[in-house]
Length: 433
Image 1 (cartoon, rainbow, N blue to C red):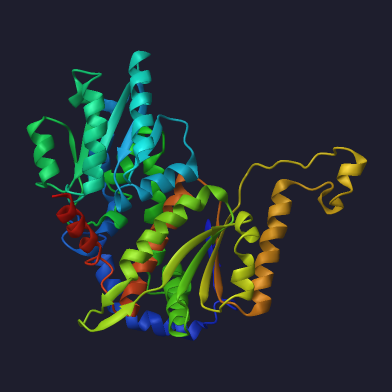
Image 2: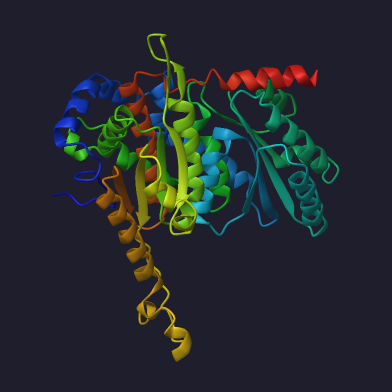
């Protein structure tokens, strides 16, 4: 049997059988063919064509050219302005990998203190001979929060650098209002393809440009995504983790599950959980199905962190309502810390820790948690990543994106629109008039 660096297991814990997965594969066979076609679509003409991003070498060349132009010893911070899909994927990768390059900071919601601190930090950087770069990211180019944050930060930059245009990069859909502004100001622009929505865009210029400046190996990130995608588009049910996972979650929904818990046993993956929360929330939470019927479909996503949240939510997860499906995620990290001898009295407080390492303790906590779920008959699947690297993180993100596309099709909802999100935006603009 082939051994993969990302292991997925569902048998005996997800309450589905191989027959259930085969049935799901039969129902999704034509859609899997469509996804394969979309993965080759360099024109990005369909909603699913985000699947081409891991293999878009032309886009990477364009991004790398601009990275070389903007990266310098003077560059101390990249201020990423975007909200939702325009920054969650980038932020997730950045926190998971913690690269050693240029600092990334993120500006999404309207928050006075964050903006004041950013302007103070910007002034200090320029006072010391450094520079910042502001990456404004908005697919539509009209997102209120992103435009607001950009106006504040660019205004501060303009007061510090007469050549401020050299320190701004815009990532948006071609011909948007934001794109037109950047063109008028001779500010470099990177494209967000029209049919690639924000929550599917982490492997586009939305994510790759700032991550490359931060020191992330974006080739390896894309390589990981491309390698898992081959498995996730396979018609062989035994080889396709996205299909298996989608089938398990769909089965749980039909059995009454209303929540999906991404339980990550690595604190560096918490932000990945928040990225997945948006992916699921906007892709699957729908008022209407594909035929137009009112269905109010969806499963509410949330993220918990082991072992921290064992001391906040475990009682609810085990003893509370049986309405949740869980995906456990753990990593095989390379480093470890031995638990030292302190003194006989202190060591006797929890003697089971003696002569153990931090990894051994965490492994026991993980196994104890999983065993508790299993003994209670609570449905779950498991993902194990081979450490946290560009390739492993790329694999996990792409696995989850294909899983969500397949699950949406099983639920008969459109994974690529979010009509209800526009409601608050319209009301907000009306109130601001």
